[in-house]
Image 1 (spheres, rainbow, N blue to C red):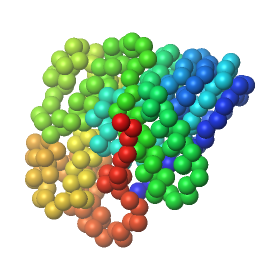
Image 2 (cartoon, rainbow, N blue to C red; image 1 turned 45 degrees about the vertical axis):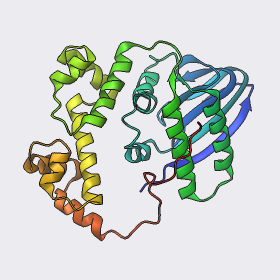
Image 3 (cartoon, helix red, strand yellow; image 1 turned 90 degrees about the vertical axis):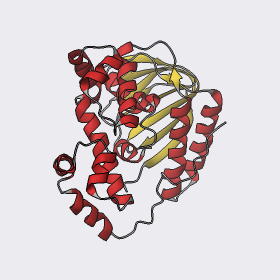
Image 4 (tube, helix red, strand yellow; image 1 turned 180 degrees about the vertical axis):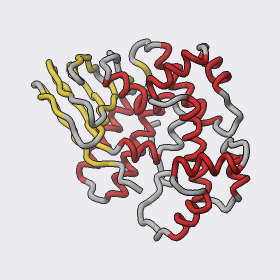
Length: 287
């Protein structure tokens, strides 16, 4: 399992920050004060209790900081998506870690999600703990706990565009109803768009069609069942929404480069890892 967390920093900024980027994604938590973010040459205001994500391809800096207190957590975004199966059904996870970075990269997002003051205090405490902790497994667990708290408590600062919200909600719906016989027609109807317009908007934010996204969800879930259960391929195919085991095997081979049976055998002969699964880790969140 790829390490999730890289580093944490907390501080007070009262001057400009030159444009730069990083090898990791960054989760920003604004504790207090104000700043003007510059991201890919586009400016936007950061308010107290804002939370947002910058990906490693974004050139960013800050202007006009006024008593700006912050926490920054550097992390591997791909590792988070691989491990956050139980959070992906939340629209706030879809917004914060998938949709908003796309909009921010294009300069089309002027506001951020916000959290409550208790969650911000939890973020500050977590940053302090992570700055001192050297055990990588514990660091990953602490950071994942913070992410869980944030996505359960985040909310829009101001009204956001309907397409933004509806695409995140559509992805969230697929994450929880992947075993059902979903089709493009039903998904577009739920979003109140035509199939063509729904597909265009979804592809804009997710860089794939809705049905491609649904297929990836089903295959991720199938890979988990191949690893964690002794169910036969027909039952796994049924559990994950495939019409039959042949179709399941065809799509699985395309995504993973091997048959489901070969994947299961490969996992079984791999040496046991000493890393704690985040799915079984104790998650402590603010009340």
